[in-house]
Figure 1 (cartoon, rainbow, N blue to C red):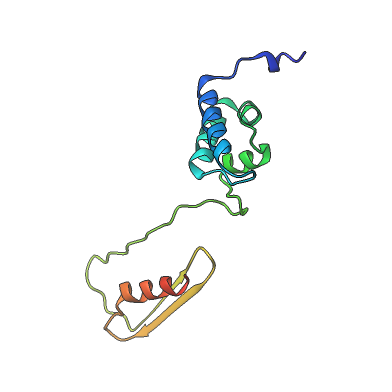
Figure 2 (tube, rainbow, N blue to C red):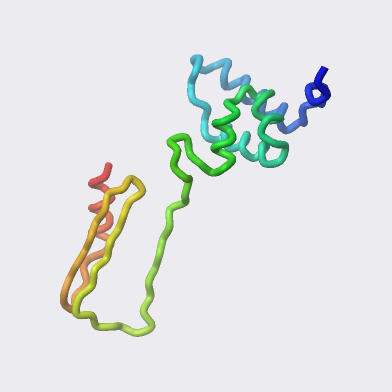
Length: 133
């Protein structure tokens, strides 16, 4: 008998196992797990290891490993949205300016203007984001 199989399952893993059992009992077979349950499993795997969490919970070991490494199911690195605010110390005059945006799905917008008046950034950005939906 393997000595690892005789080790007791920690209480936090048992609690998540009960939640998973409850979810699975009311959902059709092969229904995707909610992200909250996956995140709870990832947190437990950080603390207890992949195999000791995946085995009793009946989770895909490699799927849990990818999530633990920060890779989403689609295979892309999970990143948080970023925001950059540029504040000039004093108003500057520019003869020409070019700004480029790229969305998380890969679409791009390039704005180029000449002169002293600036475009309405909020409207431009909002319109671009709405066109992606």
